[in-house]
Length: 620
Ligand code: GLC
Image (cartoon, rainbow, N blue to C red; front, side):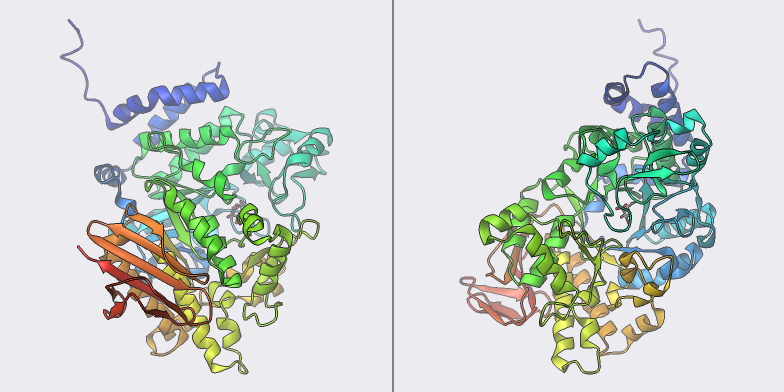
């Protein structure tokens, strides 16, 4: 007889969850670290203390979400990403302006980096000097918690960046490493000559070839070299050291315990380095992410991981892991985003259709965050093999065409973007600009522009947003896009920003301009309420749920078609990527135009230039 059977203490949620994950976690940890010391035991006790530090309201939220695990797959989620300083000045300013977000229909808010980061050496906040401290000009940790609480009371989920590949050179670990502390040094990659760094450089592509060439930095004061894949002030962490993994996971859980619902794993493909490789997407990265996922599952199961995997298509989906062993809960739909812009410039939807065929073939448990713009450049990570095979287009000349088009150099182009990190060796420039400036609204507002230019630009803007809202996943607006905010050319005059053209689309939110949304007929009014209408239709129809069946459908060379089915509903979205009118024969029958309620005969569907339709073919 089991002597303990009558006296066993109640098992805490923590113990239950740990038990479910224990074997896999231990296996992965030991496989990676061949841990002979007590790193794993330390890891487990760290998880326990993070669980104990999780406040009751968040534990209740965890339970709610465990009871409804698909809460983030709903068609009612609408996201927005923003820099708190640009939008509200600071965190309290964001909190005071949550009513604007509610007016926008936003219930998922991604706050760009807000942790302490040295001015002038911050890479937009992506060089963190203290993972437990908010940048003083933005507020305090208490302000962040208060913002999270208020968001939760309004049903808004919060996402925060977790910059895990590197720390700022001013992080205490980096400072101690600089002073020669061997334990601190073991958290980074230090070399006393260029032999190994030069070996790495042979196989590692550069992240910022113009603004920060190479992946290593010479430290004059120590007379040594440190690995810096991004900017020289961002020192790569060495995850081969289990202390780094333990402490960074603790930092992640610390942020989760402040009330974050989604943690964005910044630049995650880079976190494992190995000589002779590209140091991207190595198998150990997947082990690390899986272990972070397990850590969340044990401590804060309501918290999701969003992977920032800006890689070619085949490298992205593996970050979902498998259904049984998930890694990231969500990923950016980066290839669809850049292929969408390719389609704007070429007016040819074939590559986009090919891309969507691949997305639609993934299990619908794979959840993407869809977007037109984010805080970063648009990197032209297209399927060049396919373009070459089908259109004989080679990568370098095609990138040049896209960049010429979007910087307005190409004859007839109305776009006003700027290049980013132009690598003349590879012809590899990327692109920056707000959605409104890229689709021609900036050009159309010039005094000498023909009146139809503005109509066309607004139509293109709306069509692209409708396209984004038709895709499965969470649509995320870039703050300012909801009122057509233009490029911010002032960044050229700021010495701290001038070298980084991403600041052209990171302008301060223009509240005065946004006020014009209330004046009928203004650009702001048309875009704002046009979007609201689309969002409301999306939220009202289950056919937009992310577990709907979706496949590409119909269309022609310039018109993209996507069909969605869920329950009894069947919807076809059609998007004209050209300025010409297109007529399509989609067979027999009548559908309802969800935007106007009008009946549309399928054998003659007319899409004006940059027009789109949401046609409901069957309803439940
Ligand atoms: C991510 C961020 C980018 C930053 C980089 C380095 O890619 O999105 O803005 O420069 O990581 O942290």
